[in-house]
Structures are given as C-alpha cells and as structure tokens.
Length: 229
Image (cartoon, rainbow, N blue to C red):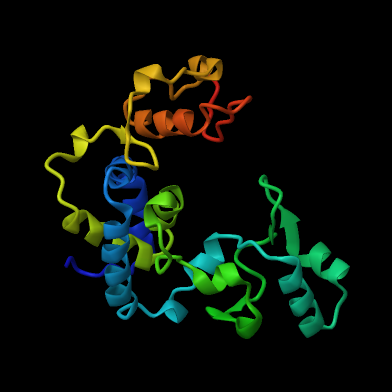
C-alpha cells in the first residue's frame, strides 16, 4: 500500500491534478462487479481509517454542508433551547435538490476541530465519508468530490487504483451503473455546450461527457461548470 497522505494542502492539490484520472477510474469501476469492489473498499477503509485521526483533521466540517432532517433539527433546537424556526433561520438553508443543509462552512458547531454537538450530530455527519456503505460504485461522483477533501477518501481511492487491475487507464471508455459501455457518439450534445469555453477541451472532455450522459433524459440540461465564450 502507498504511503498514507494526510496533508490537506497536498490532497487538495492532488485532487485538482488527478481530476481527469479520477473520472476515468470512476468509469473503470462502473464496469466491475460492484459487490467485489465493495469488499475491497470496506477492507481498505478499515485499514486506512485506523491510521487517520479525524479529530486532528475536521476538514469535512470545514469544506462541506451536511444535510439534516426535521427530527435532527428538533433535537438540536431542544439542546440549544431555541425554537426550530429560530434554529433554521440561524443555521439552515435549502439546497438545489430541496434538502435542508447547514448554511455555513466551516460548521458553526466546530470548535478547535471538535464538534460541540457530537452526540446529536446528523446521520450524514456520523456516516461520513460513507465508505462503509454498500454499492460504492453508485456514489462515485461524491467519492471523487470528497477525494480532495477527506484524507481517508483520498487514500482509499488511491489504494483502490492499485488493487483494481487496469492495463491502460486512458483506454477505458465510459460505463453506466450496470457496467454497460456507453457509446458517447449517441449522446446528443446540448446547444449550450457550443457557447461554452470548455467545449472540445480535452482536459474537460471526461467530465462533460459524463454530465451529458447523466442528464440525457432530462427536459432541461444544467451545467454548473459552464463558462460562456
């Protein structure tokens, strides 16, 4: 196994540097038996998480906004002795998917890398970075995003590259959630792409193609990486 890296600045840099490679590897993982990948990820997660102290990091609380349920809001409101309405005004916003999330990051409850409401923290906080869950290959966009944030995710994903044998990462193609290869020539390019700076940019091609495929049946195409010419 490679040397464990925990330096957050280095991980953030490598996340940007390895973005295309990580997206290509995502496509490779989609072509594998998800149950076998789960076994490898669970083993790597157990080994690597034992070597990393999350309380000395806390980067997930500094870089992300977790979702929160109404019951969790009620519990935290009672703990703080304020109404749920006041709690939501101070701490909560609605994201693009319509879910309630913490409105601020770093999280307002993070003090000296310690959670002040640790025993009452939301379920999504407790389960982060979610590598103990099954069907790892169904959550790969989230994994790639967390790669540059969480040292555990970074090291597990890098170790996984060593364990999943690939002859040539640059010749992997694209695969859907069922492991079927995708013919990107059959995916229509949205009109908005023709006026985007990133259109036909080889460095952006992988992310663009995956975005188009994931939204192929949507009535409206949305791209949050769009940059007008």
